[in-house]
Image (tube, rainbow over the protein chains, first blue to last red):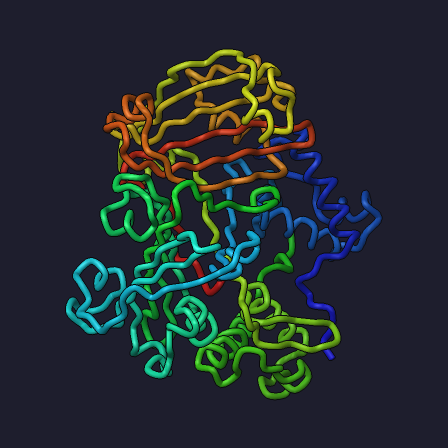
Length: 242
Length: 242
């Protein structure tokens, strides 16, 4: 049996965090100000010092407070603003939109890796990886297009995977957990192939997601995802600065 | 004087987390498997149970483990994959790229808010907000274009702000801390105005960032940022599933 994880924050600590957050937002405590010591806040809030500590750490994690061992805790001057995006499995995204999911592999073959992809992966140009292109559909309409390179040397079991049965995205999620990922968004005008596969016109602006993952054996996969025209990728209900 | 915040993880807990992570990645422990109890892991790693708890919580935060109070801890089957983007102050982004920053306000005036913006902000159509358009430059080249609506009722002091001196982005970061933000990326073909201001051609694919923030007084601001053609917004050195 497992205890309540330490990471969860008690209602009391949440209440203290809310009050401190209110003081920062209403500028009772201003950017750069040193806030009262933990011991004083513990008295004010009639709470254990550990509870105050937890509340302040929550606000530090949000970027609202700067905590320094000797210098005390100050209201952050240039708050780092972080946005967290959840990268879902595409089938689930389609199904959550209430659509029937389908999937088609357009091409899948071992290919020598071109220079730009090799550089991104930290591999030698010309090394042979699995190159695949596939389309994900919702209710038969193209939802996204993926152009993916998979490194068989970081994905034991790949030789037995049938991506016509289970798409590469899900196979990789289930069989090749990653330790590190790099993601980036950009925009591109659809080339002829993008346009044909996404059933749009060449030149249409497309949101592109680039994702590369690594495990302890090396780079696992890099993928260029082109979304259907007009698609938004957004945060949901993100809290202050998280 | 402030203690070491609780949120920091000891080297010992980090080492345990690394070993558990290795077992998951190398599929010694497979997705869906229940892992040994904390007490057993504490014996195996010759560590306090609280240290093991902290290590497992770290991995749960990363999405690698599912912790349930009664059902024990299992290797996550459908790990939620989160990507955290840091939204920097644009001047700092330009300066970090080694370029000289400059800024120009193209238009700034009180305007009745159109229906789509009003809906996004939860305000009545026609309510008067400050509407501004501005361009941020690096070495004199357009870096990004912003089209922004600011709600004076959520930004006390706005009437004294001079956005020709300090740009709205920085004024808002310093003077109107937010409690909630929504961000989304999309792609658009440049319209004539985008193209003129960004010195590109109409139709050029542009990466667009939409950001809306709220505090306890209401919506603060909503902004559409159009980046220069070819711009990438990416994560840096993101760790496993965080």
